[in-house]
Image 1 (cartoon, rainbow, N blue to C red):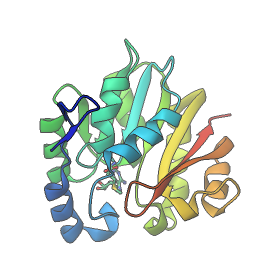
Image 2 (image 1 turned 180 degrees about the vertical axis):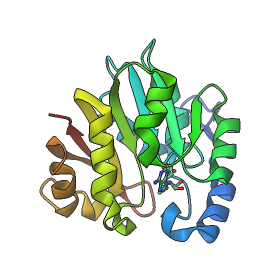
Image 3 (image 1 turned 60 degrees about the vertical axis):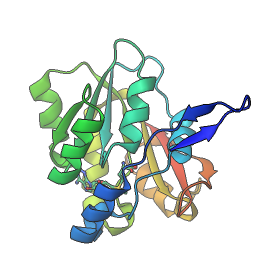
Image 4 (image 1 turned 180 degrees about the horizontal axis):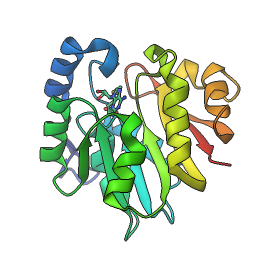
Length: 204
Ligand SMILES: C[S@@+](CC[C@H](N)C(=O)[O-])C[C@H]1O[C@@H](n2cnc3c(N)ncnc32)[C@H](O)[C@@H]1O
């Protein structure tokens, strides 16, 4: 797809990968949690709020077909490393084609400590994720505790949620607040259906 810039010239707009994503949703609706991947505008707004500066290792959990990964890779500060973790083999294959320079693990987020250990990565300073929180049930606490245990002290945690759930003192902030400090909601990203919003926190 292309759009016109202010001079009337066509500028490239990143291509979205909704085909593989929709297929995954029909195979595993609960695990995938969305019919389409996150829009480019939403990804950009979310990542503008994430703390990438000075990160040595950045991990993305639930990378899907790579909507966030592709942009994250372009924003990564030198010489930081990026590890993308996605549980679906079909989406992982798509992700590897789309982001050939990114280290992609086809694994569960619960395996994160092992994935980091076996790669001998520098300390993880930022974890970014967009996973189906609302249907995770009891696994939510285990997920957050795994993320916290992997992050360096003072590291940052940023997740995307359906906007109405991601309020500063809402329910989602309280789940996150059990494991992290300084939980704050970002701006609502209206250019996504449904609108999403980042929740950002620190490993205290
Ligand atoms: C809402 S989608 C988001 C995908 C992508 N990050 C995006 O923004 O377009 C959630 C993704 O999390 C993945 N996922 C769900 N549970 C997971 C787990 N335990 N470990 C790793 N990935 C998981 C799903 O397969 C799906 O690709």
